[in-house]
Length: 94
Image: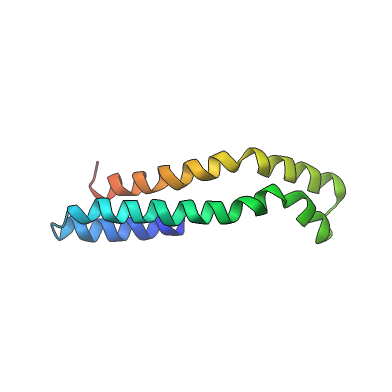
């Protein structure tokens, strides 16, 4: 979410300054940064159950949370693509 918010500011400034070519550059950079972050975070999501057990969470809760985080990994990647597109369009009032 942080990169998307930064993208909103950058795209808004670029659009206001008439540098529309920079809108695409900023969006592509945000996609790369967010997808790399998703790749880094994916192992944490995969091993969330054991990590939660390690820090003292109850067995049942850790197991359910671990199952849930594995199921939402695709959503993590879809947000990495979708959120910058939303901010890109929002900066242009579309």
